[in-house]
Length: 485
Image 1 (spheres, rainbow, N blue to C red):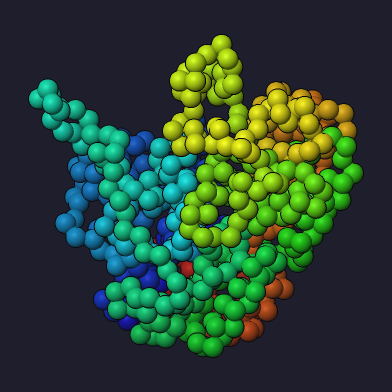
Image 2 (tube, rainbow, N blue to C red):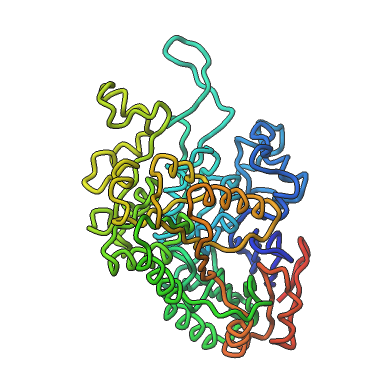
């Protein structure tokens, strides 16, 4: 028998956690955080307690109550039964957005994970440059463990000694999970490494779109996926529908055109905000920088990610390019390049992974930008607005907001704070231009008509009922209820 059970992504955007069972094979399609449900109970300053393992998340249905999938250190600490063997053959990750992969943190380290090299690089960057210490997507750090130190005393296990690498498998083309044959097909989204899957089950092929779009720089990859999905004549297609209720037409090329026009009309500094790991959007502003003879200034986390991509042979901008600069912010003591302090003291302001960029030929500081404002496009998000105090944008500067519009109260409040900062520095009103990482109504309809699955299952949408306009056999999933194919 082949069955699907949805443990997330139902009547919401994100939170995909889909269990597929086919004869003796059990695997998950994504294992992400449900932002809407999580924000209903938690926020930035009230997070689930690590000391309570998975129990805080189980309490509110943020994690499915399943045996044999969760990390043993958390279960043992909370006196919950931990099985000697895992109950999953694998986890297929469609891409590295947190609403698809964040809860990998809670999974056993011996569950094989499948994703592209680009997705793994992004998760490695999240692990190594994040400040929360709770990602653990690439390596699990055993918690609540002790060891006897050289003095014969019991000590907490931490750092490198606590690391246990997860079992990652880089996917290309066709591979097997348990007894299932799986095809991985790259698609365009808004970051590197996005993938759709075709699973050849005993009931017939099952297509999982992940998140996808046509209007990015890799739109042809999405078209090839749709063509292949149609060829296999699937018994079911699990299709995302983030924008299924919208007919707005987006285009990454349009973002670039509007941004270029704005930059050309700006005499001073151009400040932009785009998602930190949105490599398509970075490419857009990088090309604008080339065309307008400016340099795009990225932050340290973006620089670190681009270095990982370079090592993996992934074609994104290089930090040694003439039109890229790496911004070095003042941190902790704020004494970088302050000759009153030794080099050792200056370095102590930065994490080890940041130090490799401090002497890079393309590194710039707020002083560098402030003195040559018409030479830069300065990427600056909500958490980096304080850098404007040091940069001091001059008259004639502009701001381009290239992120989605707020869709909850918290985001609306954040936007108001942003606008207060922009008004203070003379950057208001501003230009807003964005292209979603998802298909609209007409595009989803066309995909369904092309693929013609026997059953259509919407996921990752607040409007699943709209899919009934596209197909006669739409199955609306319910959390925790098995769907037999």
